Image (cartoon, rainbow, N blue to C red; front, side, top):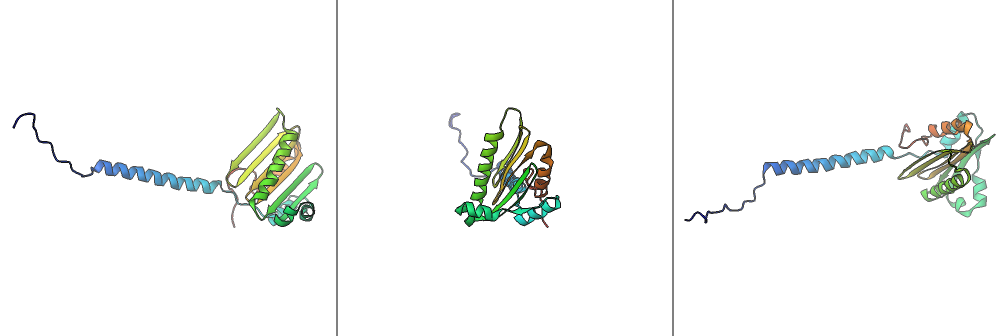
Amino acid sequence: MSKYSKRKPAYTSSVSTKSIVASFAVVAFFIGFAIFGFIVIDLEHKIPATSDEVWKIIEEQGYEPKDYTEGYHNTDVSFELSLIKCVGFEKDDIFFQFFEFNNEDNAIDIYGQAYQKITQTYNSWQKTEIQYKNQGYHLYFLDSKDKYNVAIYVENTAVYAYCDSENMNEIDSILDKIDYLTSGNNKKTE
């Protein structure tokens, strides 16, 4: 046998321990990442309030709630088919309306109309603007030109509210109690 004809070892299909551990680590990483993703998504999910809850909170805040449902039913056929209830109040400079629909599309439409009205009317270079967007909800707050404006939708519900900037805490207090003031879900389930 010559020195150039050394025999090569036959190919074996044995898998090394290092490659098994590495594969396991990669799979475990992706599983852990997926679980973390589901937890974060669940934490970001908002639970919509009901018109009855909002009615009660408006009363607790010292305002006299009104049912605006019939007025909307009379002005638009699509509201008659989809609007479950609209509750709110008006006092001095404070206007607040909460809409509960039987679908998410109409809530998104109300949010879009309110958002457009707010940005076209009150947008200026001197402003405080906060916006959260996630699947199933959008929160928009604009404090500009001495007016505080809110447009929100959470699943099948929407809020349109405004007041003088000095009274923003009045609206924020109601929104906080129904967990519509911040992103994510802080609402306590009973």
